[in-house]
Length: 320
Image (tube, rainbow, N blue to C red; front, side):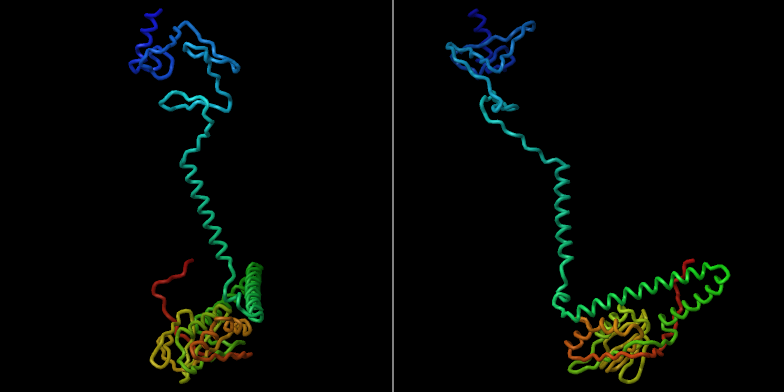
């Protein structure tokens, strides 16, 4: 038996592996105790929870089994350590976790942008109560105009589908549309209620950009026909292709030079257009800040008589 023990203990002393025939801790140079492994036909009963495993030493020392709150480190290169606290394994950074983090970051950025876009405009926040009332009235007027346009189109559709009266209704509708397009294109004169807007220089001349701002505001307020007149009596019809440039001593409107003061005659809803020009920071305020003056007069009848020469289309064709 002594020879067997010495033969079994020699691999441990020489740095052998646990599977080479012994079970135990690190090798000791003094030839410590060793435990022979069971053969292929033998089995080793496992101890129960309350039992202890005697150490293969000279004494009667025993090592208690680890409790449920203790564990041995697994996967390390060294021997198992009994009694160390349980450590939870942190989840690794996977592609799914990275995608979730990116999506959450994008969601937060979107919410911040949305909150900033919904913030109150500074010009409206500092506006007076009567200015806010005028702006609200302008929006109501635009809504009413759109509703009337929808009702007119629905009535035209019913007339076109009415059978016997369909042909005459189609002819009347075509004539009406031709007149409207002629007014918008500037090839037909127009008459109706509207405003006259006069630009008068005080300390500085009126720039072309301020006149263009007024035209844009009037278009947004529902202007249907406009023309501009200079101090020399020359008039130019304002259409979609009209452009404004600064010229020596005046402005150039579609290549026609005009001198101040300038007057815009516009047909449309007078109150809505006047509100658009008088909003805080709008046309009237801007011209006054540049050293000019704007006078607005409401009229029951405004004549827009200047005509724009028709242009022959070279590239655009209707789509049937």
